[in-house]
Length: 92
Image (cartoon, rainbow, N blue to C red):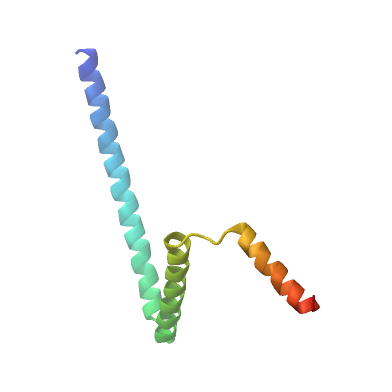
C-alpha cells in the first residue's frame, strides 16, 4: 500500500465519520423539535403563544433590518443632538 492510498483511505474514513455524526445530530435535533412541538400542541394557550411568537419574530426582523440595512448615525451628530436638547431644557 502506498502513502497516497493510505491518506485516501484516511480521508474517506473521516468523511464517513463526519457524515454519520451530522446525520446523528440531525436526527436527535429533529426528535427534540418534534417532542417540543407535541408539548406545545397540548397547551390550551397555543393561539396566544403563536401570537407572541409572531410579534417577537416581527421585532427581531425590525432589529435585524435596522442593524444591517441602514448606517448608524454619526457619533458626533448624536452628541450634538443631546447637547441641543440639554440647552433647550436649561433655557440657554
